[in-house]
Image 1 (cartoon, one colour):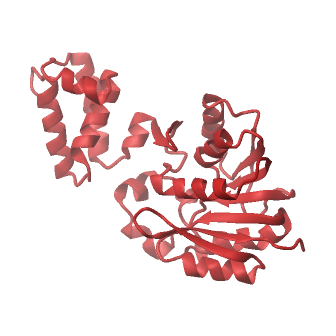
Image 2: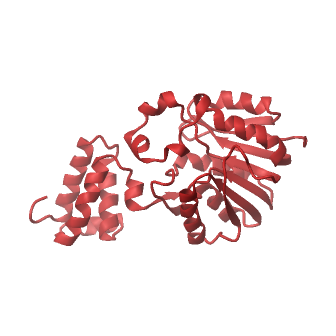
Image 3: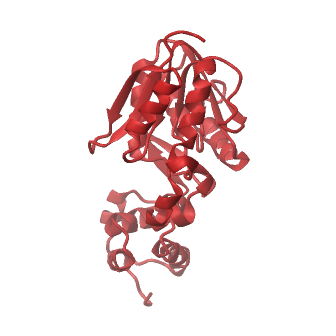
Length: 285
């Protein structure tokens, strides 16, 4: 990078570099990365366009720019992301929470009474269960994940958002849910089929945890396991609510019906794609 770099010059260079690497929002990524390193907000960047950067700052920025150019997710470089208007710590040990998953939070809140018991299966960073805990202070919740590393990140997020007394974290496989009855079971499970793997963006395919993404049986395996267990893990009139992938909603509905769930519902995301499937247990078996 040349000898004297003012902020605007560096921002433009980063934007062009990211664009050449095929990054979708090169200017935004450049702004967020610079703001992070310089400890400014984006308005602060605009107010400091003529500021020269010192060698120490350039030494920090240079490797981060290289890593983003190699398509490492911006959220991992920043160490955090926003979900449900809350900031969550994220590392390569956890899936990056997406805005589409907020639809699952909305659907869950729409079915929640004033108090109850909730299980979040595949909790990852804890984004879903923590967002729900903040909205439902009288509920007791459990976040389940098979990954000890993911649970360590979730624990930090619980403490960050002051819901550690309300949310219990458990390590376990979704094939063996805790033997307890819940009012609500929610999950954003792995749902990518192996045949779809090579089509994923490099940020996802090369950096996010495969364990949280891939599922057998054409991406439907986890839905089958969750639905089969929901019958014995839900209270009467309890709900199983899951995020689904592209063109999976109808198949997941069939799985839910075959497992004994009723009142099937499908909620679209804001781009019009079916995003959340819900099923209710009408009578305890």
